[in-house]
Amino acid sequence: MSNSYVASITAPVNIATLKYWGKRDTNLNLPTNSSISVTLDQADLKTTTSAMTSAEFKQDRLWLNGEEDLKLSQSKRLTQVLASLKEKRRLKEEKDSSLDKISTWFVHIVSVNNFPTAAGLASSAAGFAALVVCIAKLFQLDDDMTELSKIARQGSGSACRSLFGGFVAWEMGVSEDGSDSKAVEVAPLSHWPEMKACVLVACADKKDVSSTSGMQLTVKTSDLFQKRVDEVVPQRFNEMKKAINDKDFALFAELTMRDSNSFHATCLDSYPPIFYMNDTSKKIIKLVHLINAFYNETIVAYTYDAGPNAVLYYLEENELKLMSFIYTLFKDLSGWETKYSVEDL
Ligand code: PMV
Image 1 (cartoon, rainbow, N blue to C red):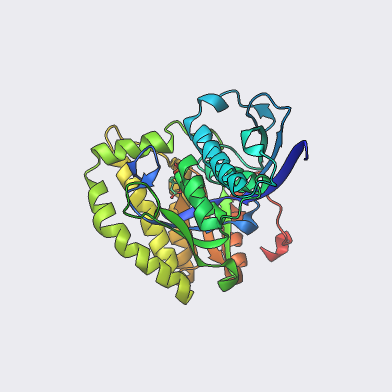
Image 2: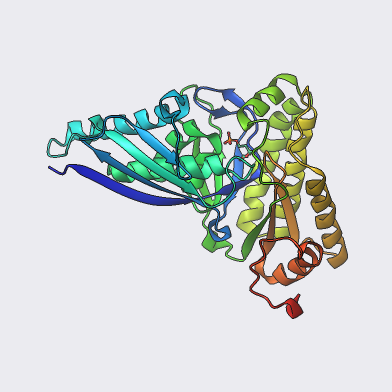
């Protein structure tokens, strides 16, 4: 018998191109619409999580970005996720008596984000995805990613999409117990490897309205919301999957930008209104439309989550065309690690 077990994993951020906004069940994190995202493997935004379980440990503990998070026992979502994974391990031990009974031990978890936490850059998505995959590895669970996505979903809805790389759909499902609300792969990144993303950080502060409370306010008070979930998103869900399968960037980009605008419109239509974008975000939106008009071709798309930071999608062949604009405007800001020389731009 071993006295301790360890596992380590990295999970990338995913940014929705068709947004999840609204819960039909807040306990199980069941959404009011299906959503689609791209997992930003190449954008270097990720969470690294390590976990250890030992017969010696006295309680479950979590360190986030170097500091112990003392609220672990009070966080319903974290304890729920941990309990679901321990239960899966317990069932495995029940079937195979040669296994150590580690499902009864406590777990220590260390998690680090290499980007601003809770600033609308999907930190909770990468965080919960890393946590679930790491503990599943620690417990040597045999479940596939779709099965694990149902547990990650309970931590943070969008986390279920970070279990896959590339283009991912979260199918909302119809059941009350959430058994069919899961992430599935639309296409791997190798299907469309030319797709690139970059993040423009307009403000790295923590957002003042969390996505959970923002969503619920929108569900309760926005008149636009119902049309969005009944008509707009279901149609866009199919169109976007087709655009990805056909590698139709112009259509993918238009649907992405329209959906970001539609989601933020329902936020503005909430009462009292929620503003996630700031003046810089709005200037970037104008800039993107200007760039596309300048080239007379859609070469770039923007999308914003529950925060002011822009994620831009573009094809590799257009990187220079896009970056020459961005560099001219933002060259005085920090964060440039360009592979081009200034003359190229
Ligand atoms: O998963 P949550 O509860 O952090 O909500 C995410 C909501 C958005 O990021 C705005 C949209 C999405 O689909 O990721």
